[in-house]
Image (cartoon, rainbow, N blue to C red; front, side, top):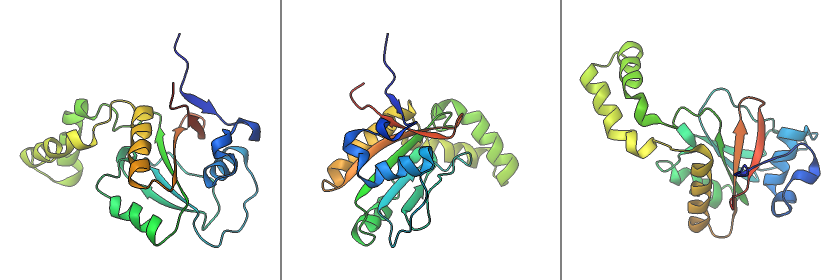
Amino acid sequence: MTLSPLIPVVRDADILPALASTPVGELLRYHNLGTPHREHSRAELLVIMCMDSRKKLRIPDNFAFILRAGGANIRRAEFKVSFAVGVGAVSAIAVIGHSDCRMVGLRGRREEFVEGLVRNGGWSDVEAAAEFDRYVDEFHIDDAVEFACAEAKRLRVRYPKLLVAPLFYTVEDNLLHQICEDA
């Protein structure tokens, strides 16, 4: 039997000690526990999450910068991360994967992608197929939890002074979960 790497947060004591007194712990309290919003004079956290429209964080204004990209894959937006760190002076980054992510298994969605881009975007079959083939390997995700952990690990190397925490959003209940990276 394999244990789930997801750690739910339904009470304050569920927040991992390493995250409890950080902006990531505050994010978990705001979003999952309904902690009353306090005023923030500046962003303390950078949230990296998928562009999926089913996800909305319950956080106060001015608490976090939010970067959204398919699958939370920000490899083509790293300057924006550096801006949030260098100019925005955030002290932590949360990389949030989610359930039912359409970037998971992207390689198997070629036909759907091409047909949709032709129908909705006015592209030719050839142009749409070329677009998919050009980018699929860069954006395909095998597992959303593993990807969030890998991105967090990669960003820790890039920004060694920052706390970088992988989290997971379940669209079924709209809650954030911590990820046990040792699972």
